[in-house]
Image (tube, rainbow, N blue to C red; front, side, top):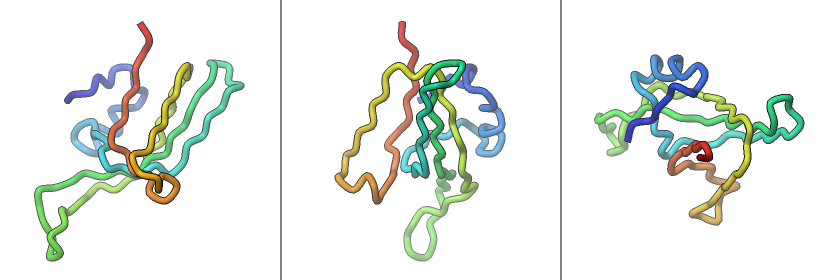
Length: 105
């Protein structure tokens, strides 16, 4: 699946670091801050630790990862927010299955 990054400010910085826009699958949320009293309306900042998975396997049979980085994404005009946990350990493991940003019609 390809993400349209035209509306994402500074997306080219992330794309140049990873060589493409990352999927954020298995990325880890470090923090979420929601602010309601902004000039542009409610906004949310999400700091995400993510990396690029390679096809290489190490001596323990784990895939080798590279380009570990902490990226903060800011979402403006938050109208609806859904956070869901597939595991009850959300407070311990902040893993993402994916990241979806949609605009209302």
